[in-house]
Amino acid sequence: MATAVSTDQPRGPFANPWIQLVAGVVCMSMIAQYQYGWTVFVLPMSDAHGWGNAAIQVSFTIFVILETWLVPVEGYLADRFGPRFVVLCGGILAGLAWVIDSSATTLPVLYLGGAVAGIGAGMVYGTCIGNALKWFGQRRGLAAGLTSAGFGAGAALTIIPITNMIKTSGYAHTFLFFGILQGSIVVIASLFLMTAPKGGPIELKPPRTLQGVYDHTPVQVLTSPVFYVMYVMFVLVAAGGLTAVAQLGPIAKDYMIDTFPVTLIGITLPALTFALVLNNIMNGITRPALGAVSDAIGREVTMFLAFLIEGLGIFALWKFGTTPFAFVLLSGLVFFAWGEIYSIFPATSRDHFGQKFATTNYGMLYTAKGTASILVPFAGALSASTGSWSAVLVIAAIANIVAALMAIGILRPLRIWEINRDRARASTHTSNS
Image (cartoon, rainbow, N blue to C red; front, side):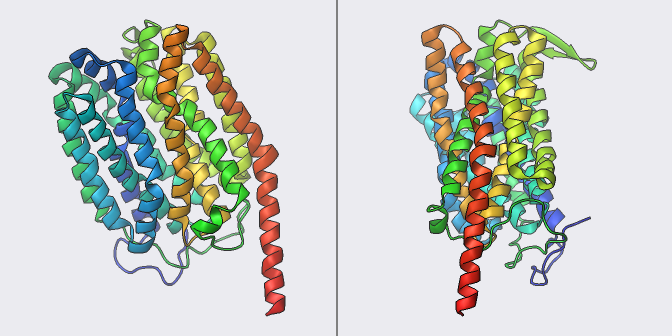
């Protein structure tokens, strides 16, 4: 059953929550490869130009930093002027970015492409997530999950064509072709996006999740301890996931299993290719699935379970992931437990801080992903200095377990305290009036 919307909803054939959701998913799926497909370009670029892994991954870090740290500004523009124009501009920039990468013969030009990609993808990502949060009520965990699933599972649709094109036509042609294709689709899909009702959707039933009392401005959010606890948790979990995204290719190569054939459900692919496809599928499935679970049992309980599973999964990848079959399955488990941060954190932000500035407020929280990305090149350097990926994987596993404990032991009690405080203040204000 669709979520009802308030009577001040915009008019027109596209003014429907599910149409807005589909348009957002399409846009997200077209920017997915900027993050999840990057790893298959790393070794071809290194072979072609003699660039080291760490130097190439600086471009990935620039991408993630700008994709995340500018989202509060882009969210403000979307809150003020609506989602269509922001996403349209983001699609143009995202397409241009891979065109730049296709002609990059020096690292500074490659870094420029990473910067343009980050700005464009951030405009699309932050706006589409914020739009989903505003169009849906008590199912906002599911809505945010379905939207972000496009960013996770969308890569699964094109990772094999991209990998094959790199082999047959070279990485530069692949950058050019898919840059133009993906950017064009985002531009077209952006035309379907509309501003959500100002009053927000009507809640069809009392939500089972903790709900804030009023709409927090961005300045008020920055004075909330809840924001900073979520920020630290986001960094802890995202750092390990981003390292896996960026370094999965090099890890498989160092384990000498990247080209080893693996057969699952009647399909045979090289281990790295299979892992990338499965990871993107799992990463996409988890976002709506665990988003819906969080709608039912609460955000913090779902965070605890998912982060704990990811931590244990990373430990297992370290101990048993040196064989092709185990590498594929365990990396899929890691991605399943990691991807839900992109549905549960935005839903929690909207729950706690309100509707009016939802895109901007989540944009500020989303910068934690950029902070986490700074650690990605250090992971490669740590691996090089120790001669293995053991230390990197152990640290990532511990970080996830710490975040799991924070969800139950710190975040939930703190949210309850803030909500009760705000209710008391609102009651006092009403009495005085």
